[in-house]
Length: 107
Length: 116
Image (cartoon, rainbow over all chains, first blue to last red; front, side, top):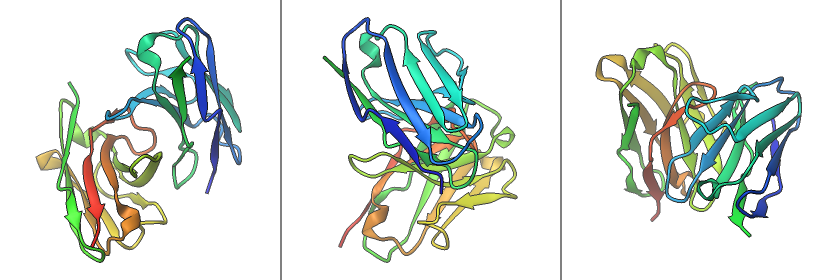
C-alpha cells in the first residue's frame, strides 16, 4: 500500500498568515492526489483534485502543487473559516490511502 | 444541490452484521462511481470500498475484504454496504462519498458501534 505522510501534524497560525501543508507519498503517484478540509462534526469537503485543480466554489486562497512523491497545499492568507483539519489522499493505486491529517489551529 | 444521506448504523455485537444505506439526490446517480469512507472516533479517514457507475467493478480495503460487500441500485439512487463479521475495529462513522477515486461530495455519515 502507498503510505501518505503529512507534515506538520499540527500547525498554529494567525489570521492572514500564509500556510503550507506538505504531503509525501511512499512511491510516485503522478498527480493523483486530492486535498480535503474537515471541520469538527462535519463531513469532509473536497478542495483540490489531481494535485492542483480546484473544486468549484473553493476560494482562490487555496492552491495545490507537486507531483510524484511531494505535494503541498497552500493557503495564501488564512481566514477564520479555515481553521480545520486537512487531509491528503492518493488515488494512483488501490487501496486509496489518506494522510494522517494536519490540524490548523488558531495561534 | 448534491445530497448524500446515510442511514443504517447502530450498535451491533462482535460477529454481527449491518447494512448501510446511502440515498443520493441532486445529480444523475448512474453517471458516477460511489464509495464508502470511514472514520474511527478521533482518528483519520480510511477508504473502505468503491463501486463503478453500473456496479460492474468494485474495490475493497484489505481490512474489510471478504466481510463487506458494496452494491448499488441506480433505479433507486441508492448505495449500500453490507457488513458481516463485524469487530471492534470496524467501529467508525461511515461516510458515503461521490466518486470512485477522489471524492467531491460527502454525506454526514452514519455511526457504527461494535460492542458487546
